[in-house]
Length: 259
Image (cartoon, rainbow, N blue to C red; front, side, top):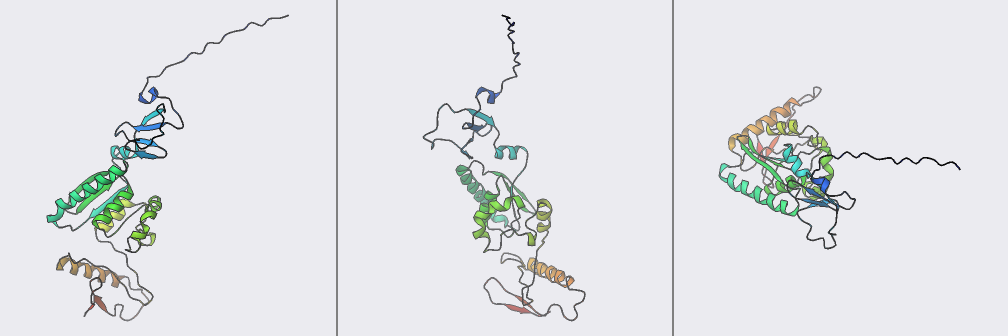
């Protein structure tokens, strides 16, 4: 009978410096806590606390990380943006308080909904948020004229499509409000860019201002629109391109303009 020599192998373990997340074992049903704002990720969503979960086990494994909102703020990025132009100076403080109050209530409901910055400049008030949904709800609260979104954000706007659609505010690729070039599009819109098209009868309906605009602002907008319209005249079209002009307020009586 031949006996084999049994050799006991020893495994050399190299220990790395321990971090916060190493103090707790990983697990599929564990908790993820934000090390910056203490938000908790559980059951596919972020929460301020987990007091409402009565069946939560006490020995759940925990992992520390940085939540998407805190990471976005740290990296100086944003998902939602609102530009408010021509707001009267006398309501600026009231507008700022409204934005902060609404954003604070939104944050209390969802820790990922946060107001990043309110920046006032001669060109207008710029508001940035961590969530595009928050920007849409905030814009609905303070009213807005144009909404620009990236293709990735369009599914998130489906929840408010019934609100934006009837008002003509839903982003659309045809109007170039669905784009990956957000900065360039916003810059063009700030300069007064507007899209227009004729209906089946050849009429063009175009907004050129609001009641709050001054006479000079309305006159400038109308003149720019007519000049742009004349430049778009097809080369093969002969005769008069613009046959008539009528100006009116919303649901108001039309006033014909002699030109």
